[in-house]
Amino acid sequence: MSLVDQHGRKIRKLRLSLTDKCNLRCHYCMPVDQLFMNEEKYLSADEYVEIIRELQGLGLEEVRLTGGEPLMRKSFSEIADKLGALNLKKLSLTSNGIYLDKYFDVLSRNRIFHLNISLDSLNEENFKKITYGNYLNRVVKNILCAHEQGFIVKVNVVMMKGVNDHELMDFVQFSQDTGIEVRFLELMRIGFACGPQNDQFISAKELLDQIKTKYSLKPVTVASDSTSFNFVTEQGAQLGFIASESQAFCGQCSRWRLSSDGILRACLLKDDGLSVKNTNELERQDLYQSLLGMKPLLRPKEVAHAMNAIGG
Ligand code: SAM
Ligand code: SF4
Image 1 (tube, helix red, strand yellow):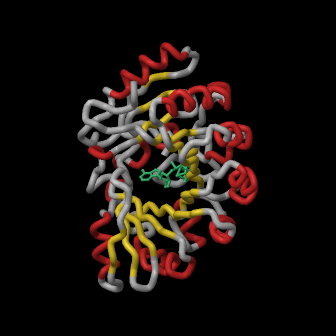
Image 2 (cartoon, helix red, strand yellow):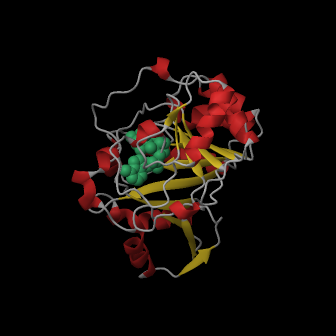
């Protein structure tokens, strides 16, 4: 058995959610009074290792640690050390960056060099308005520090009309000044961002058109299963666009997701998944086979479940 579905899509990547908890409340991700799952439901470090080692044997190459906020998982270091020992082709992290400085040594020793850090505003007041947290300076300091130390940092910005789209050029300038890639994400209709926030949607094309009024852009080649398309400006800003709503990439998708309570999903936008909790290896082999048939080819329009619980 190998992890290739009936449409020839090879599952090479796993997004692994370590917790649904977060120390921010980004308004598109969760409400201020969000309730979180009981920690007793979490998969343990050893359970992660068991599952990922099996998937590795079937062709899995890359694991990205995410959440919620993965650096809030109390056993983060233990999990990173155990997964680091699996020698995956790539082990990476998506984080809001608040606790990044506490974990530089753990990340380096496990070769977790690729860091995607969320930063939706460069303005203190706006950062607070979007995230309900007063951490802008800390996050920017940690991003710059990680970059200086040689980590490969990408900044993720969810662009929203009337919320932070007026900062578009500031982010281009940020990339130009720092040499750090900035990726603009379209607001997805998932969980809390469905419905009332639909009017904040702005497409990657609209952003590109605005940027082109000031900069000339040269396309950059990316992997065929990359979620982003990329450009570099003449001045050296590196820009990526993740157009998951307007230009879905389901045909090339190579990802599965494992939630912190052990639900394996074939797609971020599919509610149904299969639980690996309390299963043995034989049962899991059947489960992996079934999951291969559960990956949609056409993009589901929206989904009610919360991004932080699935692993964004
Ligand atoms: N807490 C970490 C962080 O913020 O980077 C990791 C988890 S977070 C769910 C992963 C990414 O998903 C972040 O870049 C976040 O901005 C993005 N995200 C969350 N909800 C989204 C939505 N409705 N549309 C687009 N991106 C979203
Ligand atoms: Fe937390 Fe990330 Fe969701 Fe923001 S996007 S609330 S940082 S999990």
